[in-house]
Length: 260
Image (cartoon, rainbow, N blue to C red; front, side, top):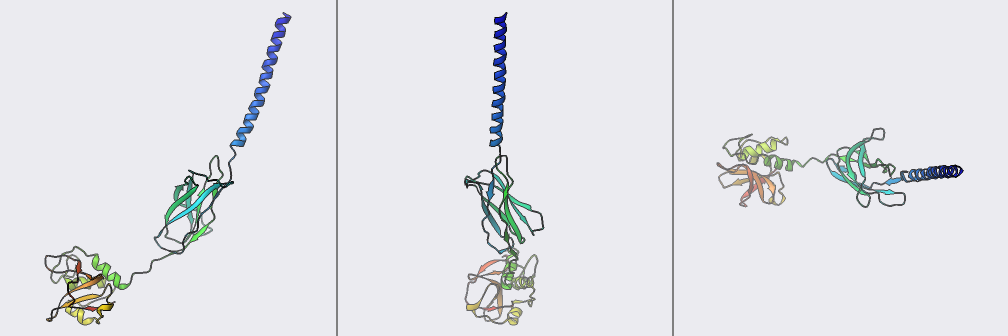
């Protein structure tokens, strides 16, 4: 019996010893686990962007996400954010992901003047960080010269049939098209090609520019006109059976007039 009791006592002590060691081991593991799960600080940068830019321009904003030792933090989602003024909340414009070098490139279309930043929201391994703020100013595009507006208006009618005496919007003759194109930029021309020729000052051929009118005269009067488009071409409604199209200037027997 005493022997059996001693064996039992040793067993209990061994079990007790194992329990103590197990508890210490667990504590050590917990300590290690706590250290390993601590989020590391990060730094998010943003590169300079051109400013001002024309309304509607697409810019690509770039920046890099790194850890405290400068190593890249890769394959992490980041947001490109903007706000109209410092007292306004941030809004997400677009999202991106850092590459193997921690770099992100995120495009955005600029419509308003605004502040921009790249924001990393953090994860279990890395703390969040936002880049410094940069400003990008938006400018409205300059209106096209009146001459180019006339060209664009004539071109917008491409493919519509020719009809003698027609002034649009479904069919045109040559002077009906030139009258329509000028009206779109606020210029009222007389109805016929001869009347238009008489109403406009002569422009030397060396100075002709897109939007000018080209008048063809065979000695018996003006028989055709079109809107000069550059490169020895003009937009015109040529003749019966044809349509409004970009037409080559086939002869040098013409004069040039300008209404804009």
